[in-house]
Length: 77
Image (cartoon, helix red, strand yellow):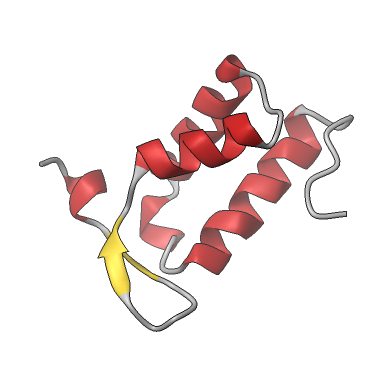
């Protein structure tokens, strides 16, 4: 496993699990984000991996990314 997959994320339940690109990708695709935008959002998260500690951090960073790069996408609004 690489350093990204070894990175632990704190879930809202208090449990920890390894960062999962696949779970984030599936969430984004199921939310209506196209494949290219989902990949780009995940790449942005991976660049900021040292700032990502919880699922809340993931949601915040993805929302900020989509606001900048896909302004017509209404994430959590």
